[in-house]
Amino acid sequence: MRPSVTLFAMIDLQVQLNRLTLRNPILVASGTFGYAKEMSPFVDFSKIGGIVPKTITPLPRPGNPPPRTVETPSGMLNSIGLDNDGIDTFISKHLPYLLSLNAPVLANIAGRTIDDFAQMAAQLNNHAGLAGLELNISCPNVSGGVDFGTNPESARKVVAAVRDACSLPVVAKLTPNVTDITAVAQAAADGGADAVSLVNTYQGMAINWRRRKAVLGNVLGGLSGPAIKPLALRCVYLVAKSVNIPIIGIGGIGSIDDVMEFLIAGATAVQVGTANFYNPGLSERLVGELVQALASEKVASVREIVGTLQGLPPRSC
Image (cartoon, rainbow, N blue to C red):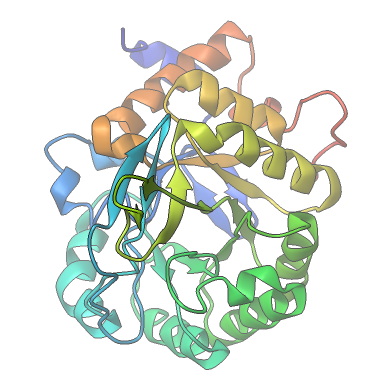
């Protein structure tokens, strides 16, 4: 049942991630929502908090050899390899449509060098209406894809270079495939990130033992879906406990209970990822269910429940 208009008016869903303001905390994750046009029959874009389209790179990429996806227990492995048409085609073909939607759009960018990131940021900075940038420094499916996200100093430098190159809010999307994610999150904060997205996929693989062969064409892939939710929650909690930076939680979100767990653990917003493949209208539905959940908790604002897990320090952002 959809919440009443009166209930929507009573609950404040707006969230602030430093320079980035969102009307509600429910976004859709890069790589699971295409360029949004594919999802138009299923989602009223004006109802969700934001759209993160698929990653773009300086030049077109063909991606990895097939097979590129395989279903696993409670999850999915993918090895797409950042298949995309490059930033010029994104700007000329996809960005005008995205900016015509009544939803904040955060362009997701990836590069091989710090200069790549800075140049792409400068190029996108010229397009009014873009809400911000998400830096993909954490893709496990391409050569060098996680280099900036596994070394704190490299993470700081790439974020700082992007901040210098553009005036847009900057979100750093981090990999969980590290020993200490809090060190990388702190480095991103030191570099000037407005927020961090936690987390990208966990590296894994699937094997056809009868054929003595890896299932994915690229052998290794990124694990997403419900299987990683406990691990992603841990990352959100650890960063919220030790780094003073807003967090966007990602990993296995498929219900309002999942959303609430991430918010309580310290995330200011969340992204729906793998669930878009089997329930493309989920993000819009979750906004309505969030209103009901907050009303049941007798709070007037979503901000009142962020980071309220026992043991977390008070959040100042």
